[in-house]
Length: 444
Image (cartoon, rainbow, N blue to C red; front, side, top):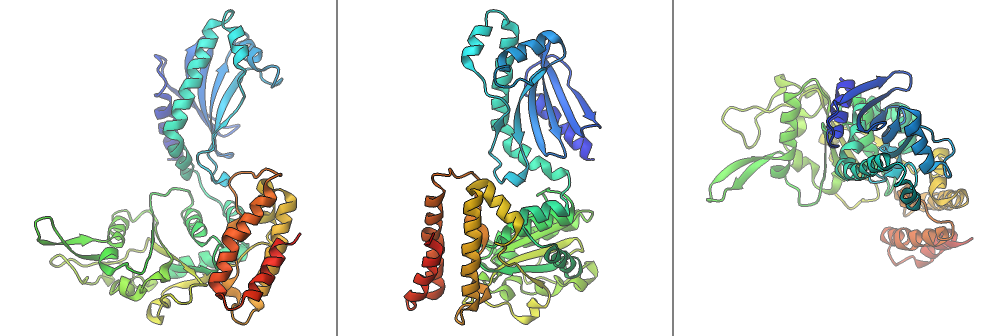
């Protein structure tokens, strides 16, 4: 199945470059990659290569003979002595980079060198320019598709642990609750990455990064049962009609495809009255109330239609523990969920290494030290406690910070994000406490 998907995808990409040559799909078992290519001008041809293990899709200009290889060496020899028979653009699609638009050109091109080569190998030069132009068009057109394409090739426990910086015991607890209760809530303070984790839990549980069976919404205070499940709407002519809500449509899809797992993520689940939003559906989301035999009549129904939650549905909510003034989830619906605490992980060595790649090892150590100290003070404060600790997301970067700007960046994060958050927690009545925290964070 996965191989068919790869072949179909590479075929569509290959078809974008005009050529009379037939498309040929190959698989290299030794290096575990699929490839597809076309001839541009003998002996130069282009080839797509998808490396499954590295999660990289490369578009390369290659040669099968010595004359073409010499042409490539003439262009790149000074900068890359090992170049012999190929050059290429690599489109890095691993989500580990957390930036789907990051496109890396495999080799820099010296335009002056091109001009010198035009006279003595016009055919190859023309072929390379065509290759370069085609790459740019394909990257622009397919970057989202390429990024999502990795969903078809598995998602392991180690990948998940590396991406979310989670202890294995916590992950095991999450999966156990998801399997047994089918409904879980990830609860924790601001910035611990609950929503990010929820999505990756789905990936791991279903065994791949495919998003097609994952639905995500965010609750807000004005959200209603009618929007979530079903309700009457006014038509253009003034007549009433029943409109299906997002959860209703999701469930119908899950019923239609029982062979697949389906995941419904509710971000900020306590920002509305959960009991009212679910209504009578709250009864049948329970793990032992699933299936057609437990069908119920909805508040708004068509004729004799009954509604049920299939076995292949999993509900994941996220809850911010610092939002104590929001709606509490009452026991009748609360008992249907497994609750798992998601804590800040500043002392996780993988997080420290990850931050070090973007802000430098010295600054990463500073962030770990300062934030661990501040979170301990917050945890010990009688008017605050563990639920008000601050998560690591504020210090997570997708792009490397210049070493000359990293201290300015750190100060901006503290002043722009952390200080307002503390004031929101504490208010203005305890200015001395805020000052003591800020002194810790901003001291050398």
